[in-house]
Length: 212
Length: 246
Image (cartoon, rainbow over all chains, first blue to last red; front, side):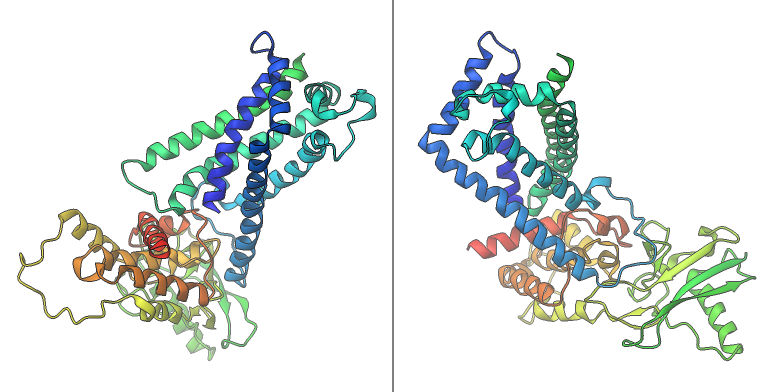
């Protein structure tokens, strides 16, 4: 659970870096983004790594659900008065933030990833020629430029992801036994900064298209 | 003080159980929480009703018997206190107090507010000891122990096994308890020898008994009457991983 989580944490940083090329951060940003998308879609090492990444997602999701079910069973009959112990808010509801992210992930796959793979057709109104993978930049632009609801769903999902990460980043280190009076405050601070960077960084793309 | 009570009553382990309301009109703020329950029981006995069964022994916060889940918190509203150290001045006049037993599949309720915590003993039997006879206390300087380790081992040994960690944990996990027992042994030379076998045996027993998994919410640390730290859980995880890969 923790190892798969840390693996996904690294992946998110790679994903975010690529995403930022959607924005006009340099002169030929769209060409760079398309080139990366093409490289990601064709390079055999990346394609192999994609399988490892999917395994990472599946292990994290399935193991998380199994643990949650075990934990509900472990309580048995619940309390009449819900627990009032002071803990960090999100840590109590981590499974729900995880499930929300899972729903978003499924949506995200159908919106973009499966279109890129050629499993799902791009929206007809977008007039994207085949193969879609070569016109991935146009698909992204079309998605965020034509539907405000999509952009809002994406931004909400990124905020939930940020909250999820704020707890789970330090949690992963604790699970692996890495808790030290000297380093844990630093790990917690890095986790908070990381989750803010992820939430804001990913949200910038839909926000850019909302305001342009 | 007038206190309204809503107490879980359950005839035996198999009975269904329900909440019963009681009112006490003459509660003194100086009374301890258990003395308040004693007063209630005296009243019930005089009325020919069955008194409320609750576990208690030393009444000075060291035996670990008196765990009650009071208004949504194990051991009630006090910080680092057991139920017996809680006083009625912590409550307001006219307040309703809901008292429940510990709830966990591994801690079945056997009567009213008494949960069977034998599962903790079974975990200790699985490995929470030093196999060799360590003899009587050796000469002070014959086994040198770092002051830091001695202090940490002593802090871990402060665990009274009350089960508040399990009661507070949203997953009914016993990892704070087990990790405290592991730490107090593994930090000292005599206990270090069997560290790998111990952690595996105790964790296996914990899983077998149906305790939940730790998701690092740290409610256990927040509610532990003895201030046991979750750094113990990290130590246990570290030892467990090391034992599994070695």
